[in-house]
Image (cartoon, rainbow, N blue to C red; front, side, top):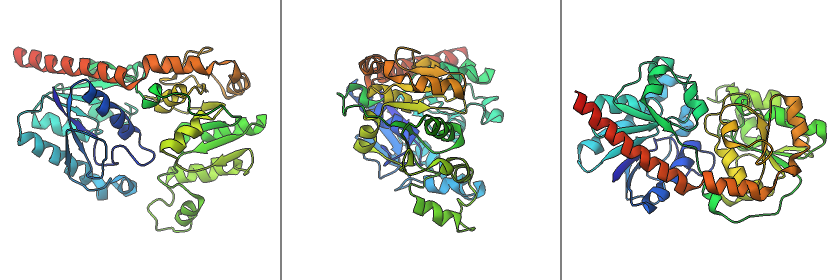
Length: 379
């Protein structure tokens, strides 16, 4: 099978730092190729992941421009997707398109026709009710958790072939570092991730906490101060920036609670691996939970609020703890040493390794092709 993997124009694959979808693609592509699937990657030219071919419109990722007003950036995704369609039109050897580009991807591909398409849903499915409530039946979809699909409009659920939990290469890695005393929250600094809750809990309990992740693409206090003092800067007044300034920074004391900006690669893995636990005080129904899977793969117990995909990923009392309130979260934080790190690693190897994810996607690719045949037969 030869597929076109559409990662979109926002970040290179793999990303240099934070990049949820691009990290998923970077994990999936090598595992698919080990199974004999040929992969044509549609991304940006600076991508370094090894694929059979690369299709690109932009040399570099366009993520920073996403912060600009919509009428200034609306053409970026469409320009990329036009490049994808042109590539598909120029050849007849693509068996399937695996699309990851939010809304624009399935909209353009359904209008074009072409090969069968499987579109992976990575986000909150209530974001685009007008589109998801009128889903094009030519596009098959999958979710990243059952909880995510359960909140989808009926039209979208009917096109769904199932869910595939996210994976991490760390599932196949040996222990990287001994556990330390500090707790960690890994991810973009925003209200949905609930860093203020983690900071409040750890400060009350006198426990060290490290917050790691960008604030609207900014990694240092110097960068943030530049934005704050420039009223004309496109990020001035951005909700994530305001959230950090108003609700997170007051807890930063340089002692118990610290923010270190975005980390990636070995630095990120070592930070995680040396943590006593990873906290997930989610303020929304998280669809996928990549950070949860990464923590477990490194033998770090996740402790979080019982929302979204977390109950699917964490076996309460065996591989982590789940709470229904901030007060209960604080109680489980104090009991985190009851979780066996090796049990977390075993669970990650069994359920969240790249080979498991790739095998599941091959099944969905075959189901997508068969679905197209049925639709054409009915027509």
